[in-house]
Image 1 (cartoon, rainbow, N blue to C red):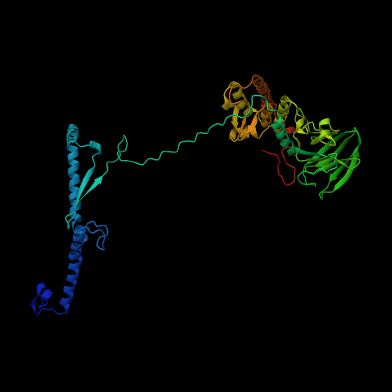
Image 2: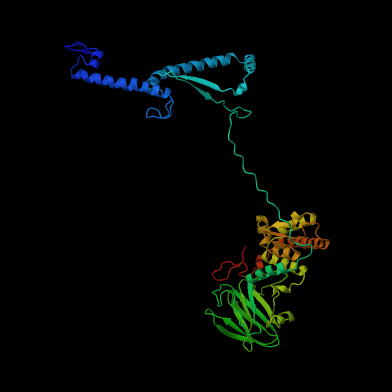
Length: 468
């Protein structure tokens, strides 16, 4: 240290304490000592500690030798220079050894007994650090080739689709009867009108849904014929639920009345017993087979009140109802052919197509011995829209299809569908093909004959009731 007035002062003299510089030189010495401790002594101590096997101290928690920051910064330029020179040399070597030299190099590598193929040999790069004598090697993985990746990749295969196991058919070889058809027919009939018959015990039958008139918007013309042996009185149930007398009908006479959708009517015997409660809910579409309009194209609902049959008398009913459009009760259907014919009429009435049900029935005819064609999943979107919510559902029930859980099926699990049932389906297919020509033919369509409210409109608060 050069000091004016004191000559040169050696650092050893300062450390020993023989000579002391003035205060300015003391500051310089302090700075030098701090630099020496920070950049020389402490890094040496860190390296010595890690070499001694330390596993975790404030100097190095991992126990690995720490690089000297100062030496790392000092040797960064030289390291980059060496790397660039090595890359240039490798490029020249590869370009000069193209062709047959490459094959010889492969034979040489394979002759050295290496267990790793030539194209998968990992390339190593040596990194030398100034400061502590540390030598590390970094392994560069080989990039993917055209034939496939040489690196181990994690592949996630998509889950295999779950195979749906078809349950065994629970239906029998013989026709199950019309129980399923009657349930379906009753539900369809209640969309258009409702009948509640009184009993001999004097109990008053409950009115359906709301026991009062609604603010209907579509008119209905009633034609009620008295086919009993005694006159009956006619009452209209007003908006407060009270009966209002309208008149009476003698035996053999017909009662004509204009009413509205959603207006209940009560027909009582002369003694006061309730014979029938009736409520119109929707206008019935007219067809060529069963017209439901008058000469002014106004909707008509007509029925006849008759004396009870022996079957109804056994159940204590006071009367019977003869409805030409929606037979009541549904148990009046006695044969599968009668039920099938009514379903065809209703399909024409609701203007749906038999094309969907034809496809399924033809599959059964072509392969009556294959169970999968005789078992249909009702949740299938195509089957649901084209068959299950149309009049075709009644056709299937009339032909003997049974509902079992999520499936509708016909015939036994083992064996062939009986011949008489195959003939029944064959006749149904012929009838449906003829109906298809009528519905989808050039002269089809009854839109011009539709009475007001035939699209389901008219009942207060229900929009277009019964629409699919």
